[in-house]
Length: 386
Image (cartoon, rainbow, N blue to C red; front, top):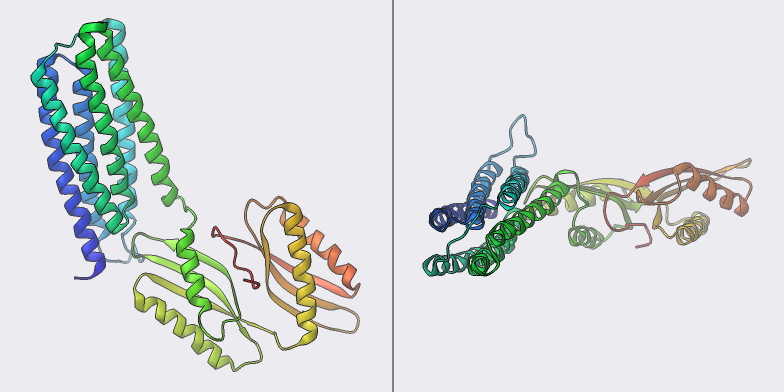
């Protein structure tokens, strides 16, 4: 069995375990809530039911993510896992809003008298042990298979532990502070669920909206590519994640323009094949032949690089130069290169190019800069100086 299949099975099992435990807890707490007449207990029970629904989405998400690629989805279905996490987050938020409305109604109507029950308190305390075990299990599996959905489920379970503790406190304190105590604690639980749901929606949406790739992943790609003899520089790394084990990346690799082009092409092919053989990243390389043997080109490259570095330092935002070429002529000389910046760079593309052109003209009035501004789609820089 391959690693992807093992991962899917681990996720499905976690979903099944979550469904069973949360349904049992829901049934127990509903019974206690009805007997004790406690809105906070029933609210906590409904939260467990939402957790069971969340586990259903985890199970379905891992089932769909295991489907192979087809004509409509050539990159596979692994992002179904991300969708399941988003659905879980939305359900939690909606249930929190409904519980909030119910608790407010109870608070102003004066309903929600809770009967003290030592048996109910003991049973509720016992359910906390189940949630502690489930939270630990979710966290263990989440770290093992790197699952954001299960990490969210683990955090939700931890929150349930505190919520159930608040319910127990309500049963103990209502006889002392009056009937409004239970409704107030119901409000606290509802607000907690809403805040948690909104946070999970935000986190789940980040990945689907194109969150920047993990820095450690980018660093590992850069380190591996640079380890090959013949790679003189790299830039323009772009990483797309279509789910666990479905990472597609592209990168520009600089090679010696004076070397054998077939040897350089074979080098790029070998790098791509090595990445694919490891099975985690499908890498595509764009080969950029660069002149490094011409002293005059190297000298001008260094001067232009210093200009870019100086502007970057002045603006307080990273910028790097790559793909530098020079075509020297009698009446003018074209300096052709790319500048990579992030979307947070304070200057517009035109302003940046104008700044660089002014400084280049100071080097020689014959220099004509032909600049292409690239946007950096990662969280770190990969200029030709690295």
